[in-house]
Image 1 (spheres, one colour):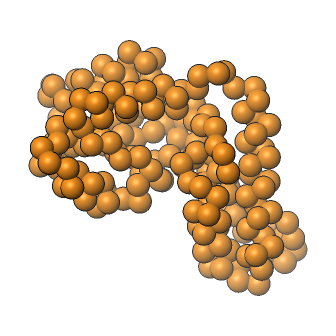
Image 2: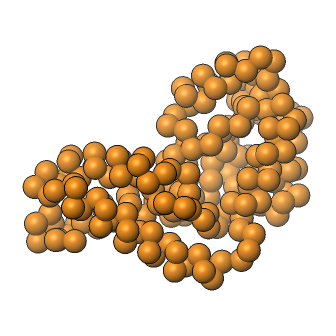
Length: 186
């Protein structure tokens, strides 16, 4: 990357964004490229996104693939996926990697007689990539947050613990300690 054209700090920030987008494991190559193109246009208007974006994606993907070769067969995000699938089978709406709580609420409202909602946003995943903690939000069907002592919260926490995913409820959300190692097929 031409740091001399866009600046070292901007180059570092764009690499960081590419890293979390690729490592999320949820966004496809088109979505990653679109987000990076927007960031390049905003933060590095002198750079050509058609050249820079593929370079950023390929660099992040190469780094991820090298690391993934050393990961265990079943990763912590794989275990999280199993928990989320079980919650769906119990009638909860599960929304993964959504843009915000409004989109999650819309998904909840589109289901007849849901048992509740579990969701996390794209930025929650980016935080998990960098800091090893994922925030899960759990809502009742009326969009109220769960509270300590409620069966819905206890059930979600129990499933996380059964899958060896340490989790605690704090300030309206479940904080899951997770080493974000999600394989991707970009």
